[in-house]
Amino acid sequence: MAMARVLAFANQKGGVGKTTSVVTVAAAMAEMGLRVLVVDLDAQACATFSLGIDPEDLQLDVRAVLVNHTEANQAIIRTGEGVDLLPASIGLADADAALAATKGRELAVRKALEPLQSRYDWMLLDCAPSLGIVTIGALIAADAVAIPLQCETLSHRGVGQLLQTIEEVRAYVNPKLAIAGIIPTQFDGRTLHARAVLSDLPERYHVTVLPAIHRSIRFAEAPAVGRTVLSTAPNSVGARDYRNLAQVLVEQAG
Image (cartoon, rainbow, N blue to C red; front, side, top):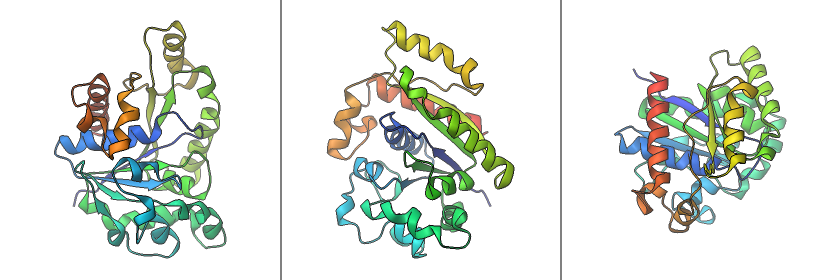
């Protein structure tokens, strides 16, 4: 039986295009005919909102799954982008504290997703901009990690710590965890600074640099209507970039 490929998107720094990358790659994979689940693991619930679901209207969310052991399939919602969503709400904010005293807390995400493995080709995990218990749990559950990184110098802060955490997870819990690569986001090829940051990435981090995502106002417009740029501006450069990225990730996974 085929098992889903689990890809976590992580970066401790906010505002780097992480959620946009998760939902748009998911939509692009769905366009390719793949069965995709987005798992929102951030209490800000931006992935949930971006896929057209109001977090305040939820009866069940990912916190209920992780903390109260509700079956994940009871909380899953079908979205207009052709992907399924395990949504989040602000209630997830106390999940780290709620899990802290429980046995096997680091395995909560893996255990929640295991029953869904045969239903999907890909599970994309939108991690909070932190390295708390839930984010560590996502790394333990994942086959690989993608690191969205804004093409600005300050965005480098924290990436080294994340890479170190990935190495520790590999060493102690999840030896198969791979780094899918860095996703350069909000790239403006017209500026020398952005080009310099991009060219510096391979030597600085010694990981794969995935296709860059160009800066576009279209990304800011899409969440307002609960869709991705693939729906709101399907012929835009941003839509093209994310389709290209999705294709590369699928090919990389073999």
